[in-house]
Length: 271
Length: 285
Image (cartoon, rainbow over all chains, first blue to last red; front, side, top):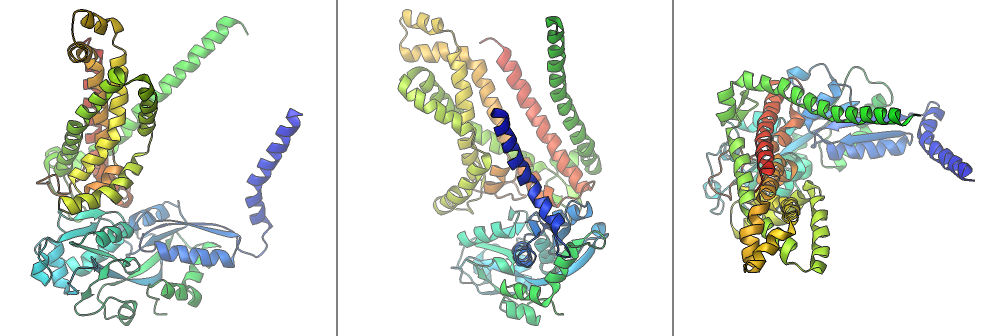
């Protein structure tokens, strides 16, 4: 009796283990398999939406995304640990042996607390604030109070763009509060009345995005190219991708994929 | 199988297991030093340990700020946690009625097992805004880290100290009482000195846990690259520096070497703590 019951249990367990591989093998011309992605947290919401839609179209494909930052994405992709590495910046020279596919564009918003009366800063002012040269909100037309800087850790794609387009020669002050992801900056800025931060356009909820050089930070102004802080988001692969990875990237860059981009307040590629 | 053979085989098996854990330790040390020493050499030992500038852009790595951060967090935590936990241990070992102890002690043992990231999360959501609203500053601060780590390390020190108080032979206290000492005199003059080695090593183990804590610390300390001028300023510890940057560091780069060198500095701290705890624990009180 005991042996029999054990056998049945084993068979059930075994069939559970076999089932997923079974279904992938049964597929004909239908796409199947697992796509592993990793990288930028700026790309994360978009990659998740892409994945959900793609998995609905191709039920035999599983897409997994991890948000480890642009550096991690490129690194893991080069090592072959993931199929797709996502970055919110261009590849660095040390990462150049990957193939890049732009999948969308994205604005970098300068955000402050909702109750902050300041609505607009120039690029120069933002740079001087982050360099620690302007330390009080009074100096840029706000209420008197210390400015608390929130920044990303070095290596972040968003920070790379922010440094090259805003800071230029200046360095971000060491007195800033450093965080590891867009979400953490958003949360911190939303709750701290004296704060300023910079995030991907998809992370401005609960905060106020400042106008830069007189241009409002919206999807429209980014699309038109008026807003100065726009960058491309990339998927990277190591070598030419096989199916289903190729189909997935094609899907993201297709008209349908770019519709998702627009729905999520990112900026579609100009095709 | 003959019994002597069973004996022999099991001896060998146990020896193998013991050697395996030792071997793993050796491997860890070797690998940390292999990459970490490169970090020291690339920057120069003095510049690395006392430099205050950590910048990928300029390729300069100095951990002066972080060493000071780690030390101030550890000292701050222990100054608050040690008296609290020792009094609590005395209460549990000597004063509390058995029914109270039966409830409190398991609760404390359970607290030891709560993952530190949970403490960090609570610190981030509750403590940081509290500090910002009532004390000023950004909330993410040395103070927040000290409070979170104090709460985290209390149960560890309490349960170890209570064990060492309980292991003091009963007749020590009974003799003191027979000589006319009050209950408190017996605890303060006899019990505590007798349990001192155990209590000291409990505190030092607690210090090791604090200096090695990474995630909870990263979530509340603010991670600024600057010397804090008050407990309300943000700071950065060696561990939070590794947590914050390891994801973006490329293998074999000088950035990764510098992070491993942080690991060496941490290892040295832990080594010092453990040897102090070891010598203290061995000495008879």
